[in-house]
Length: 420
Image (cartoon, rainbow, N blue to C red; front, side):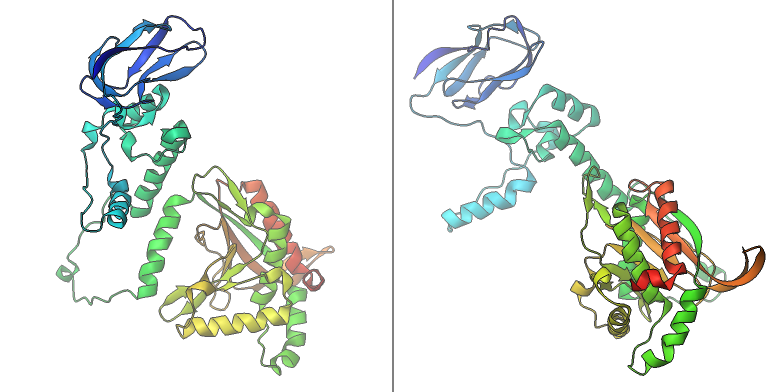
């Protein structure tokens, strides 16, 4: 072994560069290329690596000092031929992978698991620049919990932002930070009965709660004149029912929605996890809410744009029956681009459907009714269909919502639009 001074290498001719971080301490065992310092010049931030392996005996610089090429950083007791790395704490996220690797190479010897409290994480345990460290310090973020995406496992500013967004989304989905509902003994006021929610309602309830918390909802209301559409449907009804097919207004609405999604691609999209990119889908799969004794389920009809009215009617009939008999597969409820919730057969004039994340919009359909509409200089009775369009305001603004609703209403007002 020998004692050696480790100095600042060639740093591009820069002089009197400020030391903003010292990444090692006395007693640390380091290896070649271990980062020792972070320097900041007027133009860039850089890390200074070690030229040798060994044990740090003495530090010659501190934060705030100015150094140039040749300045002594530290005194090192070199290890001849032995390059040992700094003992880095291992986060819980990596325990499983470490254990797995150890078991495959040495089955008889269990892998050690090392964990440290967040306060004990040393500067040398992570690879990050001063700006990132400052942000982490200001927000109280433990850098060892952040997944790095930069070169040489460096934590970038974007990694910090993604970590914060993920934690916020997790908190929102779990209801963290929300006031707790009061606990009330209802038996004090009269007789009660406790009834367990169905499995479907429990699952859908959690999803609806998450969607309501995560999505800034806006609902646009409108009406479509379906007088001609309904006349055509009734005219065809008898012949079609002989084939065992039920041609409901919902079939026409599905076709109109597929056309509207093609005309307005931002409705046929999803936000990525970061919330900064829009994934535009080139297919048109429509989910249709089906009322069952256990609660609502949403089977997905694929490629609505490519199928005729009768084909859609057959398929919707089949999946609706499967839904009521609890026979839907997971695959039949996945991949939707847009959902329709129709209460037309029950009643109502309008409602606010909740967006089915990761979709960005949903259409609510209420019961049609005859209304006096001023047309060609006089009031005439027209069959009007109430529509309620809810959408994610992060993706869709009010003007686009109005345009989508107008387009959809126009499609439904003339049956020829749906048959072309």
